[in-house]
Amino acid sequence: MNMTESKYADLILVSNCIFSAKPDDEAPVPGIVAITGNKIAAVASKSEIGKWAGPETTIYELGDQLVCPGFLDNHVFFTGYAWTRAGVDCSGASSSLEVLEMIKSYSKTIPQGKTLVGHGLNVDGWSEHEKTGRLLDEAFGDRPVAIFTPARDFCFMNRAAEEKYGFTKDECYAEACWKLLKEILSDREQMAEEYREFSHLLASRGITSIKEIGFDDYSGFSDILANFAETGELIHRVNLVSQPVAEEINFTYGESCRERFTGDSIKFMGYNLMVDGEIASFNGDMLEPYTNKPDTCNQSPVNYEAIGKSVLEADRRGFRCALHAEGDAAVRKSIDMFENCREINGKRDARHTIIDLEMIHPIDIKRMADLDITATNYVQIMNGTGRYEDFYGPSFVGEHRLKQYWAYRSMIDEGVNICCGTDLPLDTPNIPLSIYHAVGRRFPDGKPEQGFNKEQGMSIAENLRAWTIGGQYVNFEDQRLGTLEAGKFADIAVLNQNVFAVPMEEMRKVKVALTLYNGRVVYQVNE
Image (cartoon, rainbow, N blue to C red):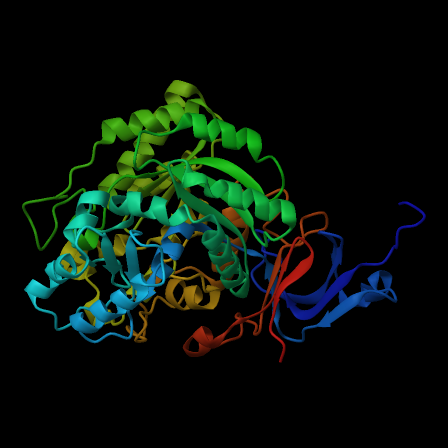
């Protein structure tokens, strides 16, 4: 140590509840976390605080608040977040005429000819004629107009928008709207401000790392990320992936990003590829036909050969691939692709992952473990169905297959590494809420009281490990992040209660009290 350096910590967290997220930890213990610079200097007993506390050390006395490694959301989509906030807010309108007046007023505030975009649309009670968008044709002519519902499952749009962007009012999911999203991202100043808001949202949830999805070459948004890192505005680590939408997989872009981002805050990981669609819309690829549509296993066939070729080439180039598969057939085919990579390209530490895995056949779980394929689970997915009685699973797959639904316990017991993603803006990361759903296995209405498919639930410790070390492992960061250990980066989240002691009925009330990124406080609740 340099003679001018202090032997004391810059900051110390003192708590009765420290959860390090190491493999054998099942409950928190009392102690301290001492931080020097951007690293953890020590995780020790309270009796050792005198060794680390000096006259200039900042000490947080946290009582029974739970100290954890910083959380990682391993599937977020900033472009989608920006999309939900773009343009005029129509949430206050109760009729098509009110929406029309809002759009007219908004049109006067932006350059003439610029596309009129909006969000928050509610079309309940609208006639089919109103939904056609002909009112917009009459009012705006050749000026494109596209106003989206909060779920982005409907768009109030005119013919000019249909012709310019190539999607329709009923087929307006993100991949279909890529031309419009690219245009939204082109406003650099606005997107920088949106990313600041996005960053603070993540910090308020204890998120210190993300896997961020960008379409194709991210429309230049990676330059904004780089600038945030250079100026110190970046308050979480970014594991960037490219999802091909407008063109074939762009390896040139990937190679350039891999060379460009070599620091501690931004890395280019590889590629995100869609395999199948939603089970709830009969687009998930199933091993057996749908119970309520027995003539099909998938009404949107998947081109597995083309996806497999892309995955094989990405693997050959040393990139990590993330395959989005919901149905059990799509999951099996995804495993086949990764197995093919190993057979043809040779075994390597690839850490590929499959995302969602709403259903998985038991025999495929062991294959995932053997091939070191991580499961990126949407552990908050039950939050999207308000009431248990509205859950589509039983009618779509039948009672006999429900045991394979959200099979977290089986994956963990078989040795599959699991981590967590929310597909933000599909949902917003909320670790206590994820415990309510993934551990308690209850829907938002609290039903069923005994838990849906409860034997597939995980423990609280396993849930926290999935949000921390599980995600850092799949992103090749487990040696630097993911557990509270001396020498690792000081990315830390503090929950305002010890979730190990909170009744499940009260779990959703727990909040984040403090977030540290790289040794500095980036979010704090002042009570």
